[in-house]
Length: 136
Image (cartoon, rainbow, N blue to C red):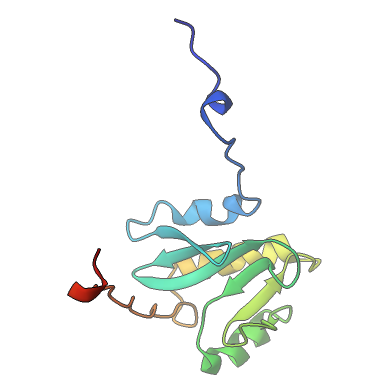
């Protein structure tokens, strides 16, 4: 029996436009990639480090997951970084920035090197314990 093309079995998987940015992180044994609010979130060493967004502004670029006290140091090194308009606790590098590729790769390198300015501990997930009366 002849093999059917992959798309015949379901939806065609689109490659995320920023996949090239997290590829250098994939060699790290602690690297985890998860979906978060329509973006791809990169975890290193259990910390949320970077989010890669590919939608419309203000969700088109890279979110740098960091604490507010690290903002001045990162912004001094990378002037294009601004607090995200919806998530101001994190810095944002818009894809529209002239130096997006160069700056994004440098941030990925810093995350890979475990720069202490990048990364936050994720919030613990709430357990979903169902009460006996809620069960069918």
